[in-house]
View 1: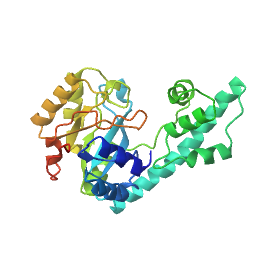
View 2: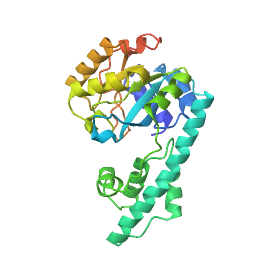
View 3: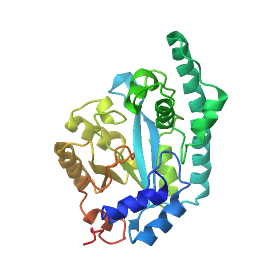
Length: 281
């Protein structure tokens, strides 16, 4: 979906506050803010950053992948802009390596390999940061797989290449340096990219956050389309005990469209000094 399509859909769903949190990309923020104003929707600048995080008590200290959300930062901040540029360039390089890995799988199955023209065709569909979903969509369009999920199950998980390493400390410095707030995203997401990779125990997850993450976080995402009510309750308690902000969202990747389906309290907006966001009549 294009930005105008996203905001038209958000307006039709009576969404009062929205943030576009592209992965490793902030290029859309100025346009997004203008569209939000056009539709009478409150807006927070946003970005989702992937970080490499390790804890000595888990997996022998080996790092896992986590996501953090940056909100209300200045999108023209030089340090943030430079780092985002590096992340975007690396994503392009990573996509090339993923396609090379896929081609090795194609060879085993007697399929024609992806070429430079295929890479360019995929790149034309990218509006933001180049990621595996773009490759999956192209594979569906070419008839290689029947669905995006099949593309991941058969190829993209096995053929994955690590993202550019970014530490929690660096992500925090970048977002806070740009005047923003940093949140731990979907900390107990059972689908991965969360502390569930270490442990599914909420008590242990909260301990990890307290021991190793608190100095670098401004808040925790407590409401999410894949977080259980038990997780929400535990994370809210942790935030209250440690003076952290709370946030939430559907994490809509547009297929399916789930924006506005997570019941985030209107009071969340007040933490950002923009007044409570309420659904219009």
